[in-house]
Length: 62
Image (cartoon, rainbow, N blue to C red; front, side, top):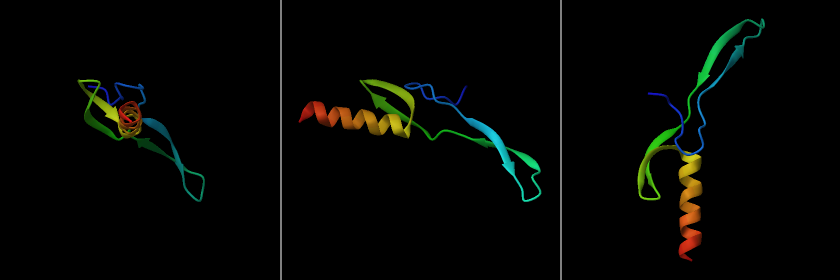
C-alpha cells in the first residue's frame, strides 16, 4: 500500500544528503500519515490535511 495522503495526494520526498566532502547519500523522508475521519469517511490523511479539515469544521459550526 502506498504511503500517500488520500486527501491531497502528497507522498514521500527523495533527495540527497551531502557530506562535507560532497559525497551524496540517499535520503527518504516520509509523510506523517494518520487514520482520521473526515466528512464521515475513514481515510489515511497527512497531519496538515487533518488540521485544515478541523479548522473548516470549526468555522462552519461557528
